[in-house]
Amino acid sequence: MFLQYMPIEIKEKYHRHKALISNFNFMSIFQISQIAFPLVIYPYLIRVLGKETYGIIAYSNAIIAYLLILINFGFNISEVKDISLYRDDINKVSEIVSSVLILRTILFIIAIVILSILIITIPTFASYKWLYLAYIGILINGAIDPSFYFQGIEKMKFITIISFLSNVAFLILMFIFINNKSQYILVPLFTSIGAMLGSMIGLYLIFGRQGIRFSFQSYQKLKFRLKESFPFFSSRVSVLVIDKSNVVLIGSFIGYTQVAYYDLAVKLVGAMKVPFGIFNQVLFPNVSRTKNVAMVIKTLKGLIIFYVLGYFSLFFIGDTMIKILGGVHLLPAKYILYLLGITMITELISTFLGAPILLAMGHKTEYTKSIIYGSLFYAIIVFILYLTNWFGIYQLTMATVAAGTFILLYRFYYCKIFKLF
Image (cartoon, rainbow, N blue to C red; front, side, top):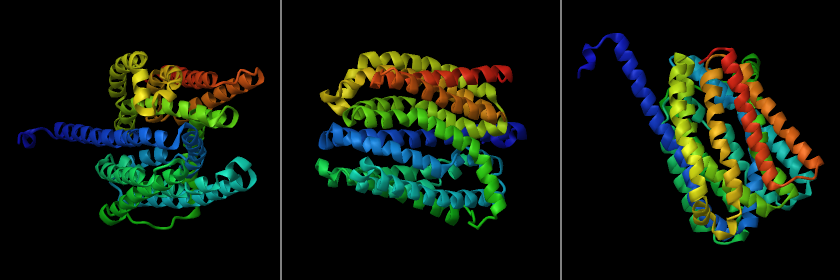
């Protein structure tokens, strides 16, 4: 009512603040649902399938994650920023969306070729070929997922509702049709169905309701988009090396049961990282436009206190959380949880120093190098562990913690060099 009497500057500030809060709320629901739904089905699956069979699924998930990174190619970072900057130019946004979908489709075909080669040439993959083939739907979804557009225009309402409904479909299918361990192939199959359903509705909203027009792009424009996203692709591959390689290494050299232990700890820590992930995704497009680093630092200070307390709470409630989700036979996961929990704090700080500060302020090279060097640091540690015959699940977990700490220190150093805070 009183808004009409305010100066234009105050009106604009009010609307920006309102949009930021709204986007934060929907991003919160989106991220929480992405973590909550897998945790809801987890106790059922681990008891029906058993920890070894579930470990096989977690292992195959890690392999597919590499292919998904190839398909996405960093577009979820580079193009989110560009869409945020050009949101009022329908032609430019249409060009960006079209380019991403075309490039993702090409990369999807390459990913399918790679997966086929793995199944044909590696006995471990051949033994579970139907499991890996069931993941093709997830790879298709990686190619058509439209969430980058909604994040770029800072309107997560649509994608949140879509994601929620697709996850509900995923849960219903799981509970109804998976009744014994021989049906483990249905896990990625039903995940595919739920994900693709959501993405297809999202595409309908983009092209049918948002006024975006799909068109084939020139080779030069596609090459430009690929080149712009390559640094982020490199960084995402590096993140994956740190994030998923432990699962692959544990499954290849130690055992699938140990993969189940590690996977549970990762899920619990991942759930606790959701809040700062939400802040990061909401702040990044906003700070890219406003350059308001002070808002990032203020948010970070509050979250550090929250996460330090959250980490120490693991020593009191970790056992109970594991028993509820996985049962007493997964209690060995608690020691991995205590170690991996350190990354809640290190990753919180490094994440906020990364995209919302370094990247948003134009220091793309330093942002990318921090992750690449961090993954190399991780690889060196793993190589030393292998040479010294000290290759165990706890040692690999600590390698992840060390790599995350390295990234944090690297980013902090350059933020100080550039006087960003």
